[in-house]
Structure formats: C-alpha cells, structure tokens
Image 1: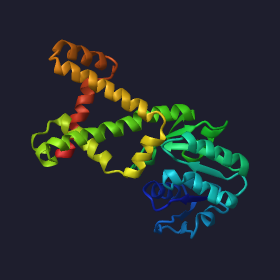
Image 2 (image 1 turned 60 degrees about the horizontal axis):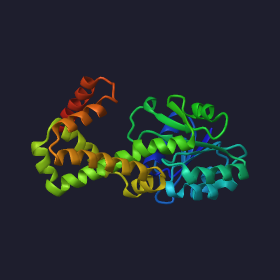
Image 3 (image 1 turned 90 degrees about the horizontal axis):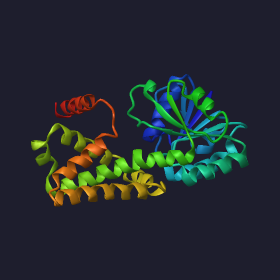
Image 4 (image 1 turned 90 degrees about the vertical axis):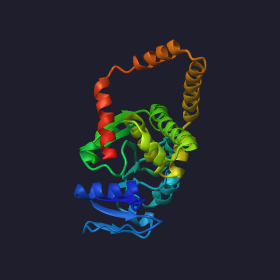
Length: 283
C-alpha cells in the first residue's frame, strides 16, 4: 500500500510517516517547508504534494490546519480513483464542509479524524482517535488503517462542542493561569515554594505554552463554541470571587462541594496521580 503524508516534516506528519512505515506501507512524504529525512528503504520524498499523492491509496493531510482545504484542492486531480484522504484537523466546522464537497465532486473517500494525542506518543497502542461519521463505513475504514487505536465515533457538531471543552477551555484556563502567576512571581520563585498541586498545574500550563501559538489561536477562533465556554469560565470565576470578597466561607464550601459532587471518581487515586506527577517533575 502506498501512503502519502503531506506535511511530512511537521510533528504530526512525522508521526504518521513512522506509523505507516511500522505497518509495512510504502510511504511518500512531501513538505513545502523542509525535506523529510527518514532512514527507511520504503520511504521517499516527493518534490510536490501532487507528486506524493499520485497513485496513493491513502493520503494523510498533516499540513497546518488552515491549509488543509487548500492542500486537498491542490492534490485532488492527482488522486487515484477511490483514494482515501485522511484529514486530522482539531476543529471540523467549515473545513469539513468544504472537504466533503470536494470529495463528492472529485470522487475520493474522505476520512475525517482527530487524533487525541500528540506526536510524542510512545506506543501506537495508546492512540485514541475521533472518527467523524461522514458516511456509512467511516469507522470501518479507520479501523483498517489504525487497528491498534481506540476509535471514538462522533458527529462533526458533537466533536466541535466537545473540543470546545476539552481543548479550547483547557488551553484558555492554562494560558490565563500562567499569565496571572507571571504577574506576581517568576517561575523560579514559584518553584521554590510550590506545592504538589500547584507544581503540576504550572507544569501543565508550561506544556500548553510550549505549543505552536498559531495552532492554538486557530483552535480557539475557529471553534464556534470557544467563546461560550470562555464566558462560562468567567462566570464561574466571578461567582467564586464574590464569595471570597464577601468572606462567605459557608458559601464557598457549599459551591466547592457542589462541584466536587459531580465527579464520582476515586478522589484518593486522583490525588495519588498528582503526587506521582509532582515527584517526576521535581525529581
């Protein structure tokens, strides 16, 4: 099987090059930014996206999210009949609509996915992938390509709303947290007096801030639900701030308990994980 990976020099592009080589595929990479160098006899690098996609049974589009539609338009004329185009954008919205229209017009099969992991994943068995049910058979097609992955079927509208919480809200919270910490303390000052919980929180925030700001900006602005959840976060913080300003200990404890009651998991196990993460980051 020939697999083309467009954007093969990027982080996720490189991941998919390695993944499909591990499955025995012949992989052709293409990247306008820089050449992909992989020491494997089944890997080659094409001069253009169209050259890479020509004759490929599977085309993985791992270019920057804002260039996904443009990239598929560029290679559509080079695709073999029935070729499967795998898109991996974090926000579906307008992108998926445009790609679906292209697939119908040009006759290729579209597999819309969202890998719920980053390129540093060590085990392919740890892959969790959202599969957008654009047509009957989408999940089966994904299973054939990613037999080791846990697949999560979703509708596109459900996906973007879920990612508004899982990605947009999480990123926004950590960016704001790091911004507030930075107003009052340097990272060194913080680390000198940190507690396990605060250490893990700042480590998560620093992890978020280590990512591509352009990508994270797109995740916020292209998801129509991001603003709603940002508003909900502000409402929650405003409510807690009022309780603190009024020195309403009972009200704060009541709100704390109300929120805690929504999470019925093993709280001790969660705390143990915090301490384990703290020991790793401080050791």
